[in-house]
Each structure stands twice: as C-alpha cells, then as structure tokens.
Image (cartoon, rainbow, N blue to C red; front, top):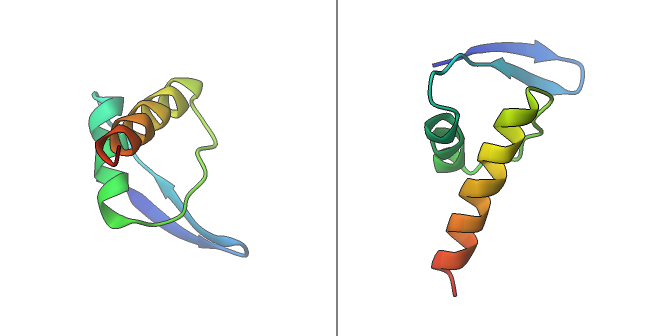
Length: 58
C-alpha cells in the first residue's frame, strides 16, 4: 500500500485506499512522524485514530 518517493525533506508516500480510517491505522502502526498533505478527509481519519489511541492510554 503506497508509492514512496525520496524528496529533499524526507519521503513522500502516496497511498490509495477505499477506507481512509484503515489507512490511518496502517500508518499509525509504524510509529513514523508524518504530515498529511491531502485530502482533508484523510486528515479527519488520522485525527480519529489519534483520539482513539489517546483514549486507550487514559
């Protein structure tokens, strides 16, 4: 899942997914720092997964 490309500032990973929540969970597994550029709907999915993980630590 994904097409990594090396850039001057790191690695750009382009992914395609029918399930953005699943893609966000998949990225969380690796523990990498990353920035979502687009789409905005994926940012929502990443926030949802982050909130779920944070709640698990309470």
